[in-house]
Image (tube, rainbow, N blue to C red; front, side, top):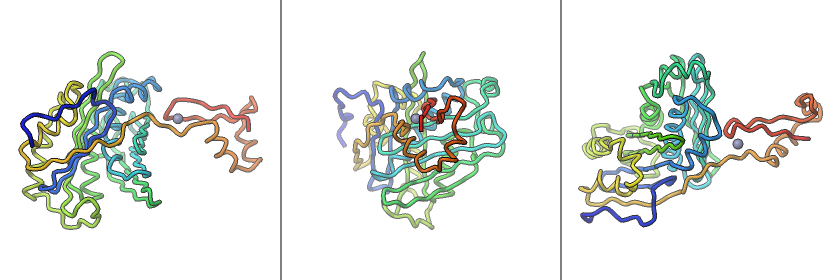
Length: 301
Ligand SMILES: [Zn+2]
């Protein structure tokens, strides 16, 4: 590679996904930095700071992992708990469209400060489910205990236990006033190539992977959220000693939700008149709640 990082003209680096591969190391990666899109998603909710930070981290992870899914597919991330301050966290990502929400006990969460660990947030009985809906119609889901100090660590466990893919995930969040920036990187070892799914003999002590994991894991939080540093520059800083690093700009990330009057009319049209009568409120309308947008739709069906 050249001695200077690639110049990115007119590019803030917000709300986009960068893919990179290190072919000689059998490694691939993604880098994401959320800015205005994150503000828009958070602005739909009046969350305590711990929930804002949790959702910000989850959205970055969801975009990092979701951008591994080919066009037309979707990744859904869910964390569920039976006794914690947070009972449910849901995010999904489909071709650049990102959304998410956190179901929580506001008072309990406000006691916990800005960055409680996973155990404080979710309690002892919690699970992480990652679902890949493929463009071809296939679907696979892995469920693992929600272990580790952060959601990023829990997702690393998911890849190791459920997919047998050694992975490094790093996420950083920075808030100033009403604006939040959250950035992250994902790096994975794929000895059998991008397409291989049978990796029963993955070696965590593979020297190429050990090297990439140490270098990738050394990315600093300040770099991930520094808007003057492009994501290309971050990848270059980390891996400039490699012979080959390929980068490719993928999706632009926007807030995306499917909640429209037409969508809910279509869903409700599948119910019988008796069921619809039961759903009607005193005002004669059916109220449908979109938790992603904190919006209630009042439908005359
Ligand atoms: Zn919605």
